[in-house]
Image (cartoon, rainbow, N blue to C red):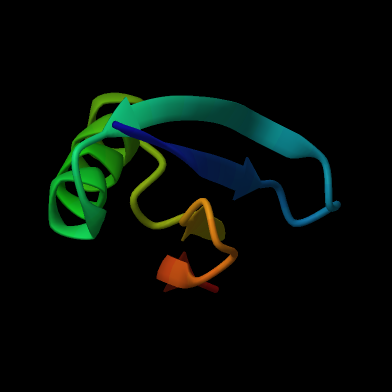
Length: 61
């Protein structure tokens, strides 16, 4: 398992959500990240999902 980081930003730059979670691989992490965004109503707000090695897996501006 690897640790991934999901962050959601307000237009002011304030972090609305900043959490880490574990997933088996990038595909599973991407699916989990999308699910978390939808659950919290943040799918259309600026967000990013970063892999443990710093690769950007999800980004919305």
